Every structure is written in structure tokens, then in C-alpha cells.
Amino acid sequence: MPARFALRACALAATLMLAACGTTYQLADIDPDTSGRASAMFQAAASQGARKPASDAAARARFARVVARIRPVAEGLCRQELAGRRNVTCEVDVGVDTKMKVRNAYFTYADPAKQRPMVMVTVPLLRDVANDDELAFVLGHEYGHLIGQHIQKGEQQAVAGALIMGAIAAAATADNPYANHDQIISDSMNIGGALGGRAFSQTYELESDTLGTLITRQAGYDPVKGAHYFARPAEAKSVNGKLSFWGTHPPDEVRLATVMATVAQIETQGGIGRKAAP
Image (cartoon, rainbow, N blue to C red; front, side, top):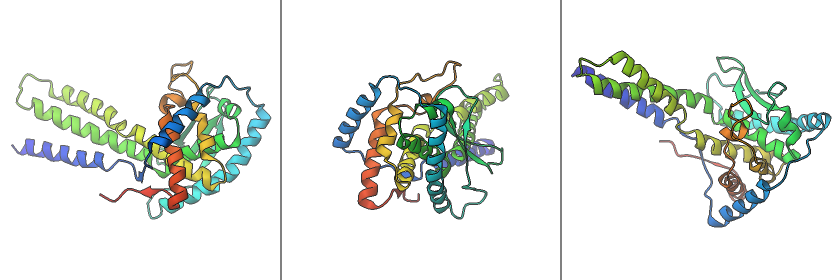
């Protein structure tokens, strides 16, 4: 009985941990008119043919000038939103990944302690963007993952999912003397960790779009024009079998609609809203 009680307590604690890992910011409401306009804009952007890649020199020049405007705005917002948090730095290394051969952009950390955040874009993406607005929005979106603390939350979700599934498996097999308890619990925890890590993945992307919209606009770019880049046709997986930029950031009209609704919210309310504390 005490063991089962402990398992229930463990599962409850993990459930509360998982619930606390959701998004911080309120996504703007999308009305039917915005949804319709976004759908039409998405279809138009998606139907465009292949672009002529910019020269390496032009792509590098665009990167330098856009980063110069986006970085101070994004890091300023980061310091404002994450003020008071321990072990958080808003000073980001923004660089070019010259090894990856596909169009991609990503946010990561250069060290396990998460003391050195990085936003990286590949050369193929730099050569493919049509204008400064598109690159600005891509960079703003990646900064959104830092401000939203999505990597940290994903790790917490994985732990919570593993604990929940492990506790369920342990309780389900407790009275079975023939069960391989250790293996069942281990397998269940692995499944729970994988599921937990993806629990809020799509809402995190929309939250990053919301933050990216604010950053892009405050830096003097057009976020709606910039978000057209996500309508670019591409395979979900790259030639080496790994998920591409579009594999983890699904291109659909919901994203354009979110950006458009967020712009309207910023214009009428002066910014984006946080969710009420639970």
C-alpha cells in the first residue's frame, strides 16, 4: 500500500510538472477574415517557383545588416521578459552554419550548462530568402525559442512523461510475479520521455512565431512579409534523411494567420499578452 501511494504521488507530481511546461504567452485570436486572407496569401506564396539563389556575397551582406538590427531588439526583449531568472543569459551568438547543406535555421546551446545560446542559419537559407523581412522573421522566430525557454521546458516535459509512464507501468505490474518489472518500467519511461518531450511542440512553434512577430516589427521589418518564407515548398526531410526546417516547422496557413493576428493585436493593444498565472 505505501508503495502504491508513493507511485501515485510520483505520477501526480510529474503531471503537475508537465502542466507547468506550457506556453507563457497568449496566442492572438484568429478571426475568419484573417484566416481566409492568410490562406490565400499562403497558397500564393506556396505556388511560387524556384528562386534564383542570391550570391554568397549578397547573402552574407544581408545577414550582417539584418542581425545588426534584430539582435539588440531581441536581446532587449529577452532581458525584459526573463528578468529575475537565474542562470539565464540573453547574449546570443548569431552565426552561419557552413556545414549543413540544406535550408535551415535553429536555436541551440553551445554547452550543456546552457550558458551560451546560439541562433544559426545555413548558407542555403541565406541565399534563398527573398528579402530582409524574411530573414528578420526567421531570426526573430529562433530568438522566440530562447525567450520562451522551449528547450528547458522540453527537457522538463521529457522527465515528467518518463515519470508518469514509469509510475503507471509499475502500478500495473505490481501484483504480477511473472512480469519483468525493470524492463517494463524502463521501456515505459523511454516511451513517456519521448511523448513528453513533444507535448507542446506545435504550440511552442506558434509561440515563437508570436514572439518573432513582435521582434521583427520592433526592429522595423514587416513580419507578415517575412512569414511568407514559411510557405516555401520543401520536403519535410532533407536528402540525408533528417528533418528539415519544414519538418519541424510545418508550413501552413495557421502560421501566417497567427502572425497577421499578432500584428493586429500589437497595433490595437501595444504588445502581446502573457497567460494568467495558474
